[in-house]
Image 1: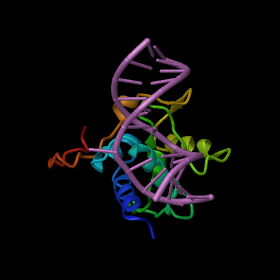
Image 2: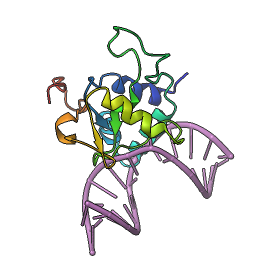
Image 3: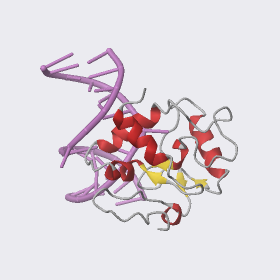
Image 4: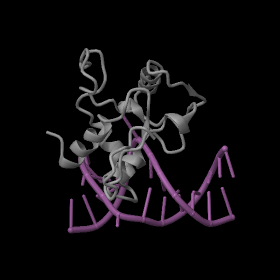
Length: 131
DNA sequence: AACTTGACAGCAG
DNA sequence: GCTGCTGCCAAGT
């Protein structure tokens, strides 16, 4: 059973549209936390119970999984994936490529334009998706 | 209960 | 661009 914190993180990750990415820090902000929280977000994703693997992927269902590969670093760097085992990052890159997001020299190309930001708690407006 | 570690961020040099 | 430091955290030892 994921902790409330983890569950909150997953809930946000599941809202990331296909073909877009967000950052650990953006998620932390959306949770109304600051400081070291971005690290905690990474820790939560590391425990992701439902990654976008062939086994867990649902056909047709939009975000039935927790697409943690769509979470990268604030500076556009790819970030981590899986326990950090060799090949984990490669999988993340492959999953992103499948959504037309290219990674070059450890950086997401056109990062600014594919970046998606969840709504900040103090902001009631929900038109976050078009940004 | 203290201390360490981690899929991080922002700001200063 | 980069490197180094500190930061309203959460889990694991």
